[in-house]
Length: 148
Image (cartoon, rainbow, N blue to C red; front, side, top):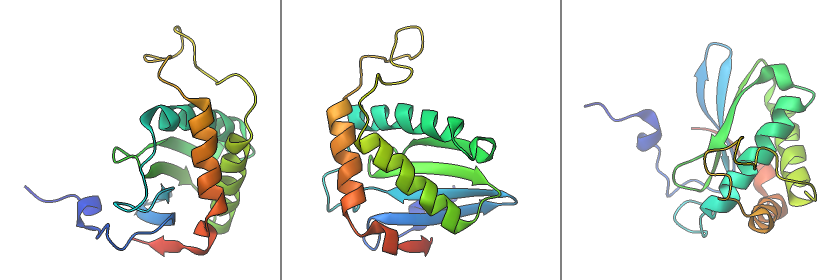
């Protein structure tokens, strides 16, 4: 069986940052690496779940809502995938900065965190989500733009 492209990337060379991992016509998949793989402590799964709920809500209600296809955590818990159509790299970077800054300061109810809205609604940790988002913001990730 052929290895998928993401398993062919040398994760020992990845740092915190934003990477373009895939381009499919007008769709671009961004890897948002909040943690350095195999170096930093990975995201707490409850924090990642919380970031997903808040981040997806902000993105799908934001200025570029019609350009957002998907936002969700990586299985390795080092960051998130963001799939967008028809936006420049610079605009995506600005959007990512804004979203993670908002998450780091979030003081509202977690969107979609009710039994009727989520299949694992108690699996959330807002404080860890805020800490993880701040950890990402505080690093020099904005200087790390790469095509995988």
